[in-house]
Amino acid sequence: MLERDLNVAGVDLDRSVYCLFGIPVDALSFQDAMAELKRAVANGVRCVWSTPNLNHLTSCLKSSEFRDILGKSHLSTVDGMPLVILSRLLGIPIRERVPGSTVFDEMMSGAAGPLKVYFFGGPDGAAARASQRLVELSPFVQGAGHFSPGYGSIESMSKPEILEDINSSGADLLVLALNAKRGHSWISVNAPRLNVPVISHLGSVINFVAGTVQRSPGLLQKTGLEWLWRIWEEPYLASRYRKDFVDLAKLVVTRVLPLLMLDPLVKFVGSGSRSLRLATEVDNGQTILALGGRVSAVHLGEVRETLKRHIECPGELVVCLKEASYVDAALLGLLIIARGWRMERGLPVRIRAPQRSAVRGLIHLHCADYLIGAGGD
Image 1: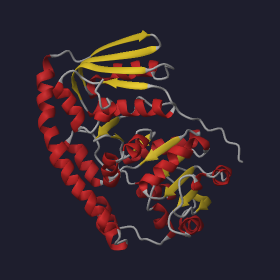
Image 2: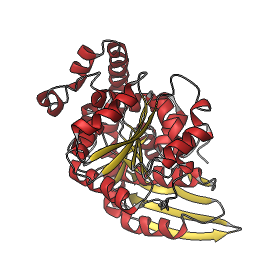
Image 3: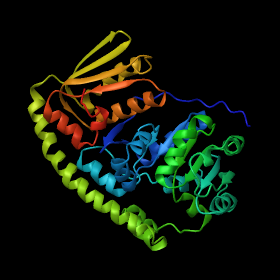
Image 4: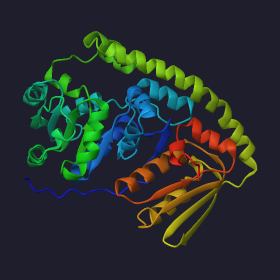
């Protein structure tokens, strides 16, 4: 095995992260995201990078396991125009898509410096073909290795000899192409045993690089209509897209429109409350962070600093929202990544529900009621 000192980063509580209907999304520009990935490679820092699109979002609404895995991502950039539009409607400052395929294209142009890439998955032979074609396509990106696991179980794709091959390759970036749920499950299980700095499920990238599927023209990419080209190239995707858009319509009716009406009302009613009240108590090994008043993006500085001091506490970490008069997507995004980091390390964490039913309603409409559990504590 190639020895490599990989810095397993702690949770970045300064991330500009928001809750978008239950999943975390980072409000980063394309260039900012590229800089984060380049920094992770240069510094040898573990970065599990997710690129949520509409299919990811609708799948997470049906699968708590998939949703919790995305909550553990170190970087989560929006790859899908429907998610950009939803973000804009909710006031989440995401202004552009950060498509994984486009990021990889920029890497092949040298934007992240010299890189070694290991391809894992895709149709039979595609990973090997992609690795070979990199020599023709880019002087900056080199194939480090490849593996086609077929349609086996997560366990069969996680054998020690497979992980050994990845680790000994010296790869800077591991690109997976399974289906989204299986790919992210594989990453969740195996990332702690890998020494690759950046790990991501980029789906179609292997096919694009292998040349088995052509990417859409630039105009369709810029206008968010790339999915039309994907259906032309891969007709079997039509069924998936149809289901996703039906789920999106349901989401708009049941969550988006009600949230657009309730959020300003709760914010107005709570405007008489103090901006933020924060108290910390340690009792019988339990650390309690009590948040009261209006807790939104403009008030989170103190919350971030307090969480930093206590995020690694060995006992149960309790975030109490009982006295909160208003919460927004910024607070919920912060709680998602803090919860995900502690869960990944087996550290107990609990979030107590607000007393006000309207604030609980906001959390429900944000699809984040899983944070406070079924009983609401």
